[in-house]
Image: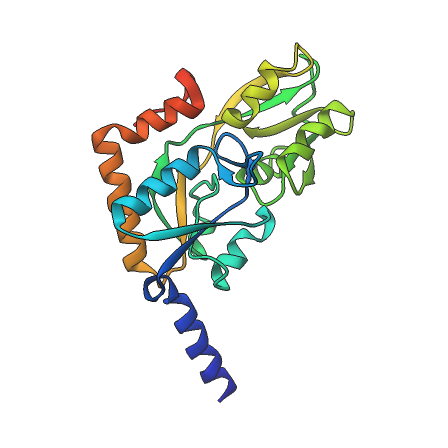
Length: 240
């Protein structure tokens, strides 16, 4: 009986996104320019504008929730929010536990940033954020993986000598490299991993996913998604 009641409860929770008045969008709030918390304490960035526009087009009332990256999928599954919009790359491994929308940012390059041009990214210590496609890549590359909970810590590890390089989305690293005055530089070759960035959903929320997918399709068609990409990522941002 306990199993039956639990299954019923989970089913009701999973379908809550379409039954409630407010759809909750979960993000990390610490990964600019995709998402960050501004000086007013509000979620901001590329994904804030994309998410708000998608909700508007779908006729949904949405609110934003921040959540630490390493528990962002479990807390979607447990019903703490209804959609993940957090710079999350679409991967086969993640698709085993959640469903994705089509991508709203194309498959982009990951890159190494180091303090010296001859950093040993093949066998040295390389930092990456925990539970990311970059961490998985480093773990299989022959280098020694040093994981951190936040992206800022991965860069700090290079600056303080804990790691020879950081491996992350190049779009995330670029401002830090550009503003470092030569203290950080890109090294090695860029690597493209994953199927682009998509929204994450519970597998049961098919209607909600369809609403957001329709909005992404429309934004690609009318050019508004490309305009937001250029606003936040500049001319280097990948367009549809």
